[in-house]
Length: 49
Image 1: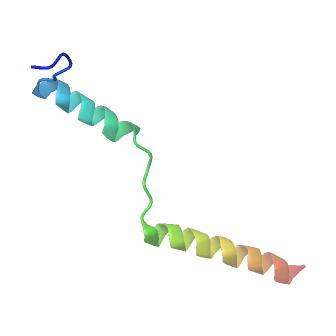
Image 2: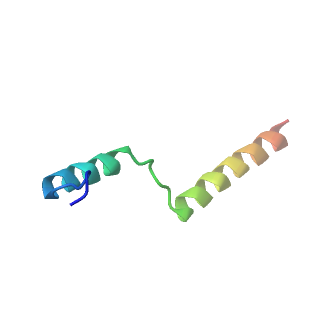
């Protein structure tokens, strides 16, 4: 048994901690939609000038 070996209760706590603290991951569809909306907004602003 290692010095820092965790029991099942400790493993659950570590897993829960990492789930809570990992950054929100956007999927590709959301990313593309965001970029597309930004592009259209910029294009609209250029045509208004």
